[in-house]
Length: 119
Figure 1 (cartoon, rainbow, N blue to C red):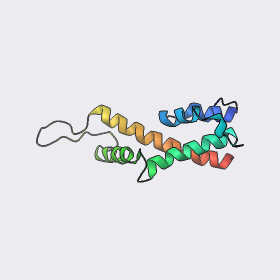
Figure 2: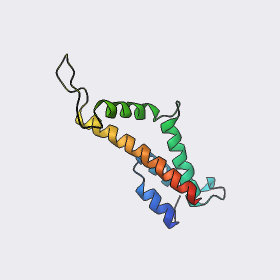
Figure 3: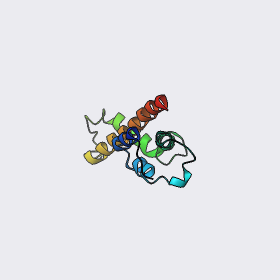
Figure 4: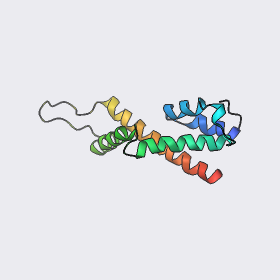
């Protein structure tokens, strides 16, 4: 679907979650059903927040694991060491990935709350 609303385009451009951005940009024109472009963006973002929050959501496990990693590493400031192998439990890229996952989720939540006020 081709978006023309400046506010909708600004929101789409700011989305960090690649899957959400891709889903919005590939939204079928025939399923619009009289919704404004902001309403379509809001619906899609709410769906992705649901995917992060609900037990049957496909991103729930990744979000929970990412939160656990950040909790155990003091938000990435320390890296715990395995006492048996004396190697780090989490690699730096995994900690960075955990930070990105939590950041994407938080941004989606903020965008949904902002868009609900506007729509």
